[in-house]
Image (cartoon, rainbow, N blue to C red; front, side, top):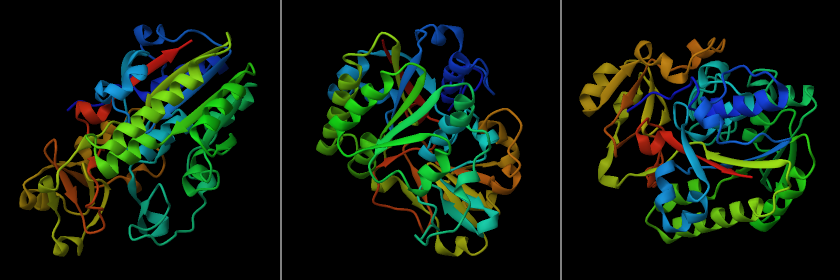
Length: 361
């Protein structure tokens, strides 16, 4: 297990590298020189994020077109989960700085552990919150726009007014797509105009890995689709455009016999959040960890996992008292967890943390 390299080798540094090149300044350091050198200078960047595509997953036969453009590897932030990484993309900040610290997160003003994808309670009840201002201002999109760079995101149709999109894309032009060919064509057409930052989000791999696992036909189909999309988007790039791709986290498959269940009485005086691979505990952690036979870490020993920088004003209120950390290949499930999922992530094993850096110009 290794802590993300927030000094120049992680997702936040890739976002900072874009911002430094396009706007001349960024709140975090850019990439380490050897990684930055792999990305040519450009007037417009086409940035593609494949949800759930860990670096090790490029060994899949259907990923060959992606592997051909791999120039390096980065670290996802902690926890290695979608909403945390997507907030880093949207802000250019570490998780400690932007304050979206986990997938299921205690947000005191709501009185609940919040599912930060859907902005519901853990049992699915919608929550009212000012999502437009949940992340710090100005965000990445607003800073780019202030420097004359137009930010555009290309997302699946129906995502445009979702709670997650309202949280992430304040100040960013939103272009929806209804099928993969339309998405690839739209990305190329939008990037054809100099002075833009075009961000394409592609969810297929994450969904297939969660539901069916990496040995499934669904996963192979998803990998085939996203590899074809990458080829379509990058086949005829204008001279002023460089395409860069990465992911928000990797995946591991966890069989049902590696599921560790938190007994119902333990929920009486504790709240549980995070991900199944790093279960956040609000309340006493140590005694429960001993009962379950997993490791535990108090907040004081892991605050740096969320990254350097000035902590978000709500960090202390939102961060857990500690985490339950199961062995690699195992998960900890609370009573609201979905025990049907095969693919899991959130931890800091290589398979979950390491994400590929792809470049085509």
